[in-house]
View 1 (cartoon, rainbow, N blue to C red):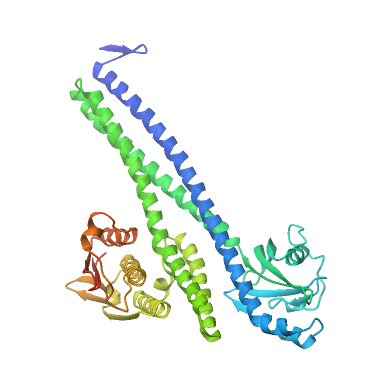
View 2 (view 1 turned 180 degrees about the vertical axis):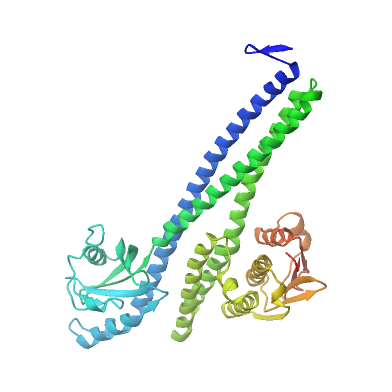
Length: 456
């Protein structure tokens, strides 16, 4: 028997208490580190999403205004200052230019008289120079002043057609100085904070799960130590130190796995779409006819809208909307058609599969693998044709994507420089207890093969 702070207790209980104290201290320290690091990660991710989304929207607005300027240039450039017929033609063109769910163009004279406002025709012809938004900000004066200074961005609150209420909006305005007009368009950016809030919610949920895991781990550890107290010996403290180190590694690995998951989802989703936008913008620059340019512009607008939807989808666990609405087969058919139109490759999609047997998780994984494989065939393989086959073989779902591109030496990928895209494909399939393989020979093409069980 011995005393600890005036309390008489057996030696083994004293040793147990002494061993538990550093464990509890370490547990508190780990919780503090998890909270601090998670809060930092949450803020960094929120800031990244906010800044990148805002930058994307600004670039999107500039492109839209440039397109509008290009649409009216033939009329505006040839017209005189008092050509009323040309002015009406420009107004008609702007009234008919819309995009997305709430996208439209507006035009005002420099004295504040409305010329174009498709969703609020009651304001047509009215002078709203003194109009203010919900904050008391004189938005029209700011837009006109910005246009007169060479064009730029203004943010304010305005009525959103689909919501019938004032929400935050970012607009880009330019001036038609010859006529004394301001022309612009805007996008509503209320969804940015919704996305940021979703990121915070996911981080908070992850922290809660981590705390639960830590609590369970602590209870198990204390139980083990209590059972060992009956046969405790001199190396008990060493055993406790080892368990603390294992617990610390578990927390660090948990954080790294979460970061890896976020990186994988961003790469597989937004990165692919932005690459697609780049190719389409390149096609716009290289277009030789107005018709071809307009087609590429339409495709670019569609892909930018897809990028916005993709950001929203990331906040909801990166679930492709097309898969939810129409299923894997339609999603893959659309993907094949899109890649064919964008790249010039011939992409053939065949399927022999009962979709009733395919789970949602398998659908998402197979879609992402197909998307990454087609991206690699387009960007790296310089392929002219790709065969994509989805079928059932002996109780397994098999996705095969084969191209006729330049191929590569397999050992370079498997040994040293495996790309993040290939790594993500492999990890996605293995997470479903499936198998993933790549077969390639230089100048003889590449075959990607993904196999997952039916019941996943």
